[in-house]
Image 1: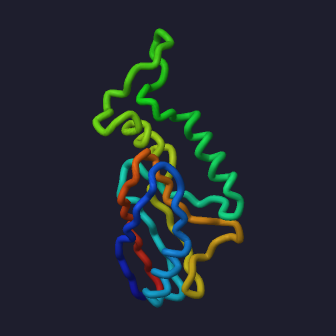
Image 2: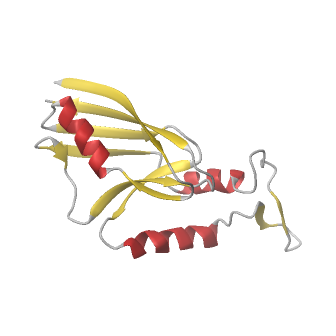
Image 3: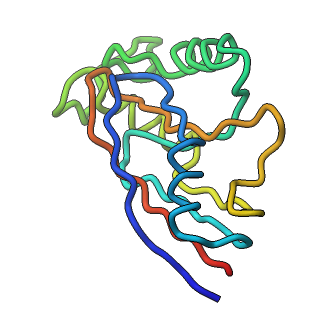
Length: 149
């Protein structure tokens, strides 16, 4: 058994999805592990990881619209006892600051995936995505821990 631990660094263009399949498969091939397990950890509190549809871009658009409806990025929190929305207490980096943290709490920071024949073992329509929750472009890091042979 061997293990490799590195960080994948990427830039996002702001809120939205960045597909990781190709980058991860290239990294796995370079690590020369044919059979194993890949554990991913997003090293940020305002972005997350998701496995979702990779063929129809409307799925990702629908996910983003749903999240916008559930956690608006206008800087206002849920209704108080009088039916009014008040500002979040944590807004140091703008209106999308606390909503980005809530979106991360509702989604996943980690995932574990199987590796077979030196590639991710995924379903036909599955894509691995970094889901950026901040409005502005960001530099993001994902810890990639591969164990296998």
